[in-house]
Length: 228
Length: 369
Image (cartoon, rainbow over the protein chains, first blue to last red):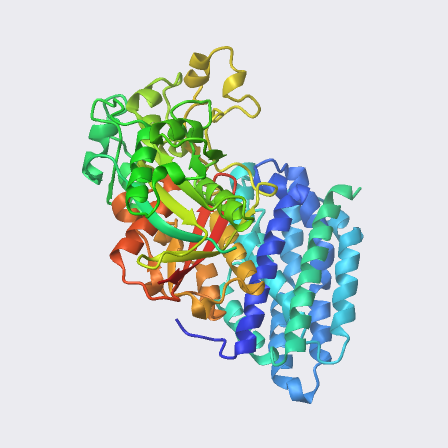
């Protein structure tokens, strides 16, 4: 196995990020809509609600990544390149999500005009705020959580939805898409972690950001059931 | 007050039974060989195990007997006469009797007068809870010593006749899974508040456990049929009806099983961050786990993070002695000590992840010679 993380601080940072992820993953299982999904009690209407609520944050997703790219100065230009690459890859993800919503029986106009739920507002606001700070290395923590979630969506959620809803056409392209190029993404993240975990303060802020993003992501999903 | 494991013992009934002989002991369900057997055995890697039932599926030795023999083996290896034992703490998933507690029955067998007793009930990690009770007791100076015994006689649950009693005659994968996994045996540890100079004493640094039943559904269970959401075995008008409906089969919800890896790793990382575990200072790892779980992304991540303990430090006898539920770790520790040369100061990390409803127990030992 190739070791992408060479520095002691980088290793420490990954250790803590792993722990934050596992805590987040467990908290996620307690969110009612996720619990229904994971125990085979998700209705097709639930699934549509889930997509509708997620879309409002996904469409903003590339904004915070792009903004954070512009916040990296010349001494961090290598990170800027990596972040721009990431933003480019994901900035049209929402289109796939909208197609799934329609395929699952939703109206395009409904998903396009829906507002952000309370959790999405908080998550979006926090990410845009963090991205506006100079050299926002802490956002590696946000990328860690969102990348992990993409992986979970593709290997677990998409499979469960297919199994329980048995759709005649594909309604899980968005969820599945996030499993592709996973190895490359992970390698990039490792390299970024090694690059930015250069001080104890940096590690602390990366881990804190991962924790906040995880909590706000749960809030976003908790709010799916409150959405009218 | 420090607490030391000053003696260990184990007992495995009868001859080792290899994979081809299992069905001769447990019996063929409806006279047909299992279609799932080889697949499940391949994944758990177990080669031999022991059963306390014979080829007629009659009980040769009771669970209490297995516990007694392990306890006697442990006492014989110790410097303490059994009458001096102050506390008897035991664990089993299934005593011979539903009531009273297993410790009461074992105390009578061992003939120890006026001992304080504790019975811990659960699945694989229940022995660690029994051990923790004893550890905490000595630590708090409430007693000088304690005998901890863990014993299992799971094979009685796997007789062919149990499956043939099911009304709709369909045995699902989840009900058959553990038939090829669990077997019988017992282990015992003697704890004292001072080390013994002419033996291997293991100082118990700490025992900690994290349970996640608030998050996950039941994964390994006995008491409910596969189709019933609410009713448990005692809610049926008769026990016969509970059996017919399949409520008395031991089941593993294999789809939930993967969660045990995340749960185990999470606890491990927690212990690193609290400073209880320093990966570089662990000399040996004893884990109640099949090694095929140690593949996959999460272990690669542990390796990237510099927290994976190298494979040569891991020891298990699971493949030869079988998975004996809560007795496994004690049986493993006993054989490990007796077959390895240990140096003073060596550290041993023990881990027991239980899939029942996701409880994971850890213990750190230091060798004192």
